[in-house]
Length: 82
Length: 233
Image 1 (cartoon, each protein chain N blue to C red):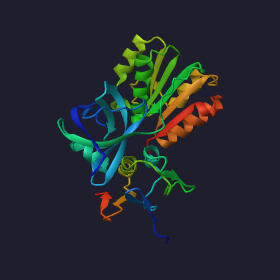
Image 2 (cartoon, rainbow over the protein chains, first blue to last red; image 1 turned 60 degrees about the vertical axis):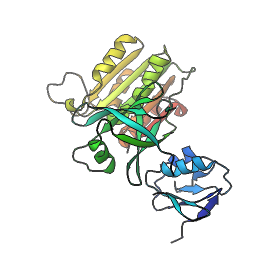
Image 3 (cartoon, helix red, strand yellow; image 1 turned 90 degrees about the vertical axis):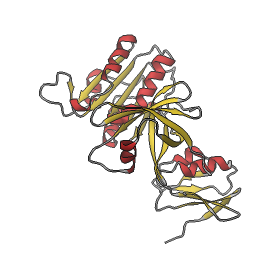
Protein backbone atom coordinates (compact mmCIF):
# COMPACT_ATOMS: atom_id res chain seq x y z
CA UNK A 1 0.00 0.00 0.00
CA UNK A 2 1.28 3.45 -0.93
CA UNK A 3 2.19 5.60 2.06
CA UNK A 4 0.31 8.87 2.53
CA UNK A 5 2.44 11.80 1.37
CA UNK A 6 3.52 14.48 3.83
CA UNK A 7 3.54 17.90 2.18
CA UNK A 8 5.12 21.03 3.58
CA UNK A 9 3.01 24.18 3.37
CA UNK A 10 4.42 27.20 5.17
CA UNK A 11 5.22 26.31 8.74
CA UNK A 12 3.17 23.11 8.61
CA UNK A 13 3.60 19.64 7.23
CA UNK A 14 0.26 18.19 6.19
CA UNK A 15 -0.88 14.67 5.43
CA UNK A 16 -4.20 13.19 4.29
CA UNK A 17 -4.82 9.65 5.50
CA UNK A 18 -6.60 8.36 2.41
CA UNK A 19 -8.08 5.35 4.18
CA UNK A 20 -9.88 7.66 6.59
CA UNK A 21 -11.05 10.25 4.07
CA UNK A 22 -14.77 9.93 3.28
CA UNK A 23 -14.95 12.84 0.84
CA UNK A 24 -17.01 15.09 3.12
CA UNK A 25 -15.15 18.05 1.58
CA UNK A 26 -15.16 20.21 4.73
CA UNK A 27 -11.45 20.76 4.11
CA UNK A 28 -12.19 21.97 0.59
CA UNK A 29 -14.60 24.58 1.95
CA UNK A 30 -12.15 25.64 4.65
CA UNK A 31 -9.08 25.88 2.44
CA UNK A 32 -9.90 25.51 -1.25
CA UNK A 33 -6.36 26.57 -2.18
CA UNK A 34 -4.91 23.65 -0.28
CA UNK A 35 -7.41 20.79 -0.64
CA UNK A 36 -9.45 19.34 -3.45
CA UNK A 37 -11.12 15.99 -4.07
CA UNK A 38 -9.65 13.59 -6.61
CA UNK A 39 -11.58 11.21 -8.85
CA UNK A 40 -11.92 8.75 -5.96
CA UNK A 41 -13.54 11.50 -3.89
CA UNK A 42 -10.54 11.62 -1.56
CA UNK A 43 -8.90 14.81 -0.38
CA UNK A 44 -5.57 15.68 -2.00
CA UNK A 45 -3.14 18.44 -1.09
CA UNK A 46 -2.00 21.17 -3.44
CA UNK A 47 1.71 21.59 -2.69
CA UNK A 48 1.64 25.11 -4.13
CA UNK A 49 -1.00 26.38 -1.72
CA UNK A 50 -0.29 29.79 -0.25
CA UNK A 51 -3.30 29.72 2.04
CA UNK A 52 -3.02 30.94 5.60
CA UNK A 53 -1.92 28.62 8.37
CA UNK A 54 -5.21 29.35 10.13
CA UNK A 55 -7.29 28.13 7.18
CA UNK A 56 -5.20 24.99 6.83
CA UNK A 57 -5.62 24.17 10.50
CA UNK A 58 -9.37 24.84 10.33
CA UNK A 59 -9.54 22.51 7.32
CA UNK A 60 -7.89 19.75 9.33
CA UNK A 61 -10.03 20.39 12.36
CA UNK A 62 -13.21 20.35 10.31
CA UNK A 63 -12.61 16.84 9.01
CA UNK A 64 -15.26 14.51 10.49
CA UNK A 65 -12.89 11.54 10.42
CA UNK A 66 -9.69 13.32 11.50
CA UNK A 67 -8.09 12.27 8.21
CA UNK A 68 -5.89 15.36 7.95
CA UNK A 69 -2.80 15.41 10.12
CA UNK A 70 -0.90 18.64 10.71
CA UNK A 71 2.68 18.78 12.04
CA UNK A 72 4.93 21.66 12.98
CA UNK A 73 7.44 21.63 10.11
CA UNK A 74 10.36 22.63 12.38
CA UNK A 75 9.77 20.38 15.36
CA UNK A 76 7.68 17.61 13.72
CA UNK A 77 5.33 17.95 16.66
CA UNK A 78 1.82 16.81 15.74
CA UNK A 79 -0.51 19.80 16.03
CA UNK A 80 -3.71 18.11 14.91
CA UNK A 81 -5.35 15.73 15.79
CA UNK A 82 -4.36 16.09 19.41
CA UNK B 1 -3.20 25.40 19.43
CA UNK B 2 -6.51 25.30 17.61
CA UNK B 3 -9.10 27.36 15.82
CA UNK B 4 -12.15 26.06 17.58
CA UNK B 5 -14.66 28.62 18.77
CA UNK B 6 -16.61 28.35 21.97
CA UNK B 7 -20.36 28.43 22.39
CA UNK B 8 -22.46 27.88 25.49
CA UNK B 9 -25.61 25.79 25.54
CA UNK B 10 -28.27 28.16 26.91
CA UNK B 11 -31.31 25.95 26.42
CA UNK B 12 -32.06 22.32 25.69
CA UNK B 13 -35.58 21.75 24.43
CA UNK B 14 -36.88 18.23 23.99
CA UNK B 15 -39.29 18.59 21.08
CA UNK B 16 -40.33 14.94 21.22
CA UNK B 17 -38.76 11.56 21.88
CA UNK B 18 -36.45 11.88 18.88
CA UNK B 19 -35.86 15.53 18.04
CA UNK B 20 -34.21 18.08 20.30
CA UNK B 21 -33.46 21.76 19.90
CA UNK B 22 -30.29 23.16 21.44
CA UNK B 23 -29.86 26.93 21.74
CA UNK B 24 -26.33 28.29 21.92
CA UNK B 25 -24.60 31.57 22.49
CA UNK B 26 -21.31 31.82 20.65
CA UNK B 27 -18.37 33.65 22.20
CA UNK B 28 -17.62 35.21 18.81
CA UNK B 29 -20.05 36.27 16.06
CA UNK B 30 -21.15 33.42 13.84
CA UNK B 31 -21.21 34.66 10.26
CA UNK B 32 -23.11 31.90 8.54
CA UNK B 33 -25.20 31.78 5.36
CA UNK B 34 -28.70 30.30 5.49
CA UNK B 35 -28.32 26.53 4.99
CA UNK B 36 -24.72 26.13 6.12
CA UNK B 37 -23.46 23.91 8.92
CA UNK B 38 -20.85 23.99 11.65
CA UNK B 39 -18.62 21.16 12.76
CA UNK B 40 -18.70 20.37 16.45
CA UNK B 41 -16.08 18.51 18.41
CA UNK B 42 -18.15 15.71 19.97
CA UNK B 43 -15.22 13.69 21.26
CA UNK B 44 -11.45 13.46 21.13
CA UNK B 45 -10.68 13.91 17.45
CA UNK B 46 -14.32 13.31 16.55
CA UNK B 47 -16.15 15.99 14.60
CA UNK B 48 -19.77 15.99 13.52
CA UNK B 49 -21.54 18.48 11.27
CA UNK B 50 -24.81 20.17 12.28
CA UNK B 51 -26.82 22.62 10.21
CA UNK B 52 -27.84 25.80 11.90
CA UNK B 53 -31.64 25.85 12.15
CA UNK B 54 -32.25 29.19 13.82
CA UNK B 55 -30.15 32.31 14.09
CA UNK B 56 -30.90 35.30 16.27
CA UNK B 57 -28.43 38.14 15.98
CA UNK B 58 -24.72 37.57 15.66
CA UNK B 59 -24.09 35.22 18.57
CA UNK B 60 -27.25 33.17 19.13
CA UNK B 61 -28.03 30.08 17.12
CA UNK B 62 -29.95 26.84 17.46
CA UNK B 63 -29.36 23.33 16.25
CA UNK B 64 -31.86 20.59 15.65
CA UNK B 65 -30.45 17.27 16.79
CA UNK B 66 -31.95 13.86 16.22
CA UNK B 67 -31.13 11.61 19.14
CA UNK B 68 -32.00 8.03 18.38
CA UNK B 69 -32.36 6.24 21.74
CA UNK B 70 -31.24 3.00 20.07
CA UNK B 71 -28.09 4.50 18.55
CA UNK B 72 -24.96 5.17 20.57
CA UNK B 73 -22.80 7.10 18.08
CA UNK B 74 -20.45 9.82 19.34
CA UNK B 75 -22.74 12.66 18.23
CA UNK B 76 -25.76 11.10 19.90
CA UNK B 77 -23.88 10.48 23.15
CA UNK B 78 -22.46 14.00 23.12
CA UNK B 79 -25.82 15.71 22.78
CA UNK B 80 -27.56 13.28 25.12
CA UNK B 81 -25.18 14.40 27.86
CA UNK B 82 -25.04 18.08 26.95
CA UNK B 83 -26.63 20.29 29.60
CA UNK B 84 -27.52 23.95 29.82
CA UNK B 85 -24.39 25.90 30.70
CA UNK B 86 -22.07 23.42 28.98
CA UNK B 87 -19.57 24.69 26.40
CA UNK B 88 -19.10 23.29 22.92
CA UNK B 89 -16.20 23.70 20.51
CA UNK B 90 -17.01 24.30 16.88
CA UNK B 91 -15.43 25.31 13.59
CA UNK B 92 -17.11 26.67 10.54
CA UNK B 93 -19.34 27.60 8.85
CA UNK B 94 -19.09 25.15 5.99
CA UNK B 95 -21.20 23.98 3.08
CA UNK B 96 -22.52 24.95 -0.32
CA UNK B 97 -26.18 24.30 0.49
CA UNK B 98 -26.97 28.00 0.70
CA UNK B 99 -30.19 29.85 0.01
CA UNK B 100 -29.87 32.24 -2.90
CA UNK B 101 -32.43 34.92 -3.54
CA UNK B 102 -33.13 34.01 -7.14
CA UNK B 103 -34.95 36.80 -8.94
CA UNK B 104 -35.40 34.91 -12.18
CA UNK B 105 -37.69 32.18 -11.00
CA UNK B 106 -41.27 32.34 -9.92
CA UNK B 107 -41.34 30.28 -6.73
CA UNK B 108 -39.36 28.37 -4.14
CA UNK B 109 -40.00 24.75 -3.21
CA UNK B 110 -38.48 23.44 0.00
CA UNK B 111 -38.54 19.68 0.54
CA UNK B 112 -37.40 18.14 3.81
CA UNK B 113 -37.61 14.89 5.69
CA UNK B 114 -36.75 14.35 9.35
CA UNK B 115 -33.88 16.46 10.65
CA UNK B 116 -33.36 17.69 7.08
CA UNK B 117 -35.76 20.44 8.08
CA UNK B 118 -32.95 22.10 10.05
CA UNK B 119 -31.19 24.10 7.28
CA UNK B 120 -34.54 24.53 5.54
CA UNK B 121 -35.95 26.32 8.58
CA UNK B 122 -33.06 28.76 8.53
CA UNK B 123 -33.55 29.34 4.78
CA UNK B 124 -37.30 29.95 5.08
CA UNK B 125 -36.89 32.25 8.08
CA UNK B 126 -34.31 34.18 6.09
CA UNK B 127 -36.44 34.34 2.94
CA UNK B 128 -39.72 35.32 4.57
CA UNK B 129 -38.81 37.18 7.73
CA UNK B 130 -35.46 38.77 6.89
CA UNK B 131 -35.74 39.24 3.12
CA UNK B 132 -39.52 39.64 2.97
CA UNK B 133 -39.64 37.65 -0.26
CA UNK B 134 -43.06 37.92 -1.87
CA UNK B 135 -42.79 35.03 -4.29
CA UNK B 136 -44.65 31.80 -3.45
CA UNK B 137 -42.71 29.66 -0.97
CA UNK B 138 -43.77 26.04 -0.55
CA UNK B 139 -42.62 23.74 2.24
CA UNK B 140 -43.23 20.00 2.10
CA UNK B 141 -42.14 18.26 5.26
CA UNK B 142 -42.09 14.50 5.74
CA UNK B 143 -41.96 12.62 9.04
CA UNK B 144 -42.71 9.05 9.99
CA UNK B 145 -45.58 9.27 12.50
CA UNK B 146 -47.38 11.55 14.93
CA UNK B 147 -44.78 11.03 17.68
CA UNK B 148 -42.15 12.62 15.41
CA UNK B 149 -44.03 15.88 14.83
CA UNK B 150 -42.30 19.10 15.91
CA UNK B 151 -42.31 22.79 14.87
CA UNK B 152 -45.78 22.19 13.37
CA UNK B 153 -47.32 25.19 15.14
CA UNK B 154 -44.37 27.33 14.09
CA UNK B 155 -44.97 26.60 10.42
CA UNK B 156 -48.73 27.11 10.76
CA UNK B 157 -48.14 30.48 12.37
CA UNK B 158 -45.70 31.46 9.63
CA UNK B 159 -48.30 30.42 7.05
CA UNK B 160 -50.81 32.67 8.79
CA UNK B 161 -48.40 35.63 8.80
CA UNK B 162 -47.15 35.21 5.24
CA UNK B 163 -49.89 34.55 2.66
CA UNK B 164 -47.25 33.56 0.09
CA UNK B 165 -46.04 30.67 2.31
CA UNK B 166 -47.71 27.26 2.05
CA UNK B 167 -46.82 24.41 4.37
CA UNK B 168 -47.77 20.75 4.13
CA UNK B 169 -46.79 18.02 6.55
CA UNK B 170 -47.11 14.39 5.56
CA UNK B 171 -46.52 11.23 7.58
CA UNK B 172 -45.28 8.05 5.96
CA UNK B 173 -46.47 5.71 8.73
CA UNK B 174 -49.26 7.49 10.61
CA UNK B 175 -51.74 5.90 12.97
CA UNK B 176 -55.27 5.20 11.76
CA UNK B 177 -56.55 8.29 13.53
CA UNK B 178 -54.26 10.72 11.62
CA UNK B 179 -56.37 13.19 9.65
CA UNK B 180 -53.54 14.92 7.77
CA UNK B 181 -51.61 13.99 4.67
CA UNK B 182 -50.28 10.43 4.41
CA UNK B 183 -47.39 9.20 2.30
CA UNK B 184 -44.21 10.81 1.04
CA UNK B 185 -43.48 14.43 0.24
CA UNK B 186 -43.06 13.49 -3.41
CA UNK B 187 -46.73 12.38 -3.47
CA UNK B 188 -47.79 15.87 -2.40
CA UNK B 189 -45.54 17.63 -4.90
CA UNK B 190 -46.85 15.40 -7.71
CA UNK B 191 -50.39 16.43 -6.81
CA UNK B 192 -49.65 20.14 -6.49
CA UNK B 193 -47.33 20.78 -9.44
CA UNK B 194 -47.86 20.10 -13.12
CA UNK B 195 -44.53 21.73 -13.87
CA UNK B 196 -41.62 23.03 -11.78
CA UNK B 197 -39.80 24.67 -14.66
CA UNK B 198 -40.01 28.11 -13.03
CA UNK B 199 -39.01 26.92 -9.57
CA UNK B 200 -35.93 26.88 -7.42
CA UNK B 201 -35.84 23.87 -5.10
CA UNK B 202 -33.96 23.12 -1.88
CA UNK B 203 -34.02 19.50 -0.75
CA UNK B 204 -32.63 18.08 2.47
CA UNK B 205 -33.03 14.78 4.26
CA UNK B 206 -32.02 11.15 4.03
CA UNK B 207 -30.32 9.85 0.90
CA UNK B 208 -33.31 7.98 -0.56
CA UNK B 209 -35.70 10.85 0.06
CA UNK B 210 -33.34 13.37 -1.54
CA UNK B 211 -32.77 11.18 -4.60
CA UNK B 212 -36.49 10.61 -5.16
CA UNK B 213 -37.22 14.32 -4.77
CA UNK B 214 -34.53 15.20 -7.31
CA UNK B 215 -35.93 12.63 -9.77
CA UNK B 216 -39.38 14.09 -9.39
CA UNK B 217 -38.20 17.68 -9.78
CA UNK B 218 -36.33 16.76 -12.95
CA UNK B 219 -39.46 15.02 -14.26
CA UNK B 220 -41.35 18.21 -13.50
CA UNK B 221 -38.81 20.10 -15.64
CA UNK B 222 -37.17 21.97 -12.79
CA UNK B 223 -33.81 23.14 -14.20
CA UNK B 224 -31.01 21.01 -12.69
CA UNK B 225 -29.00 24.07 -11.73
CA UNK B 226 -31.95 25.18 -9.60
CA UNK B 227 -32.09 21.99 -7.56
CA UNK B 228 -29.97 22.34 -4.41
CA UNK B 229 -29.53 19.35 -2.15
CA UNK B 230 -27.95 18.27 1.10
CA UNK B 231 -27.96 14.66 2.30
CA UNK B 232 -27.85 13.79 5.97
CA UNK B 233 -26.63 10.21 5.57
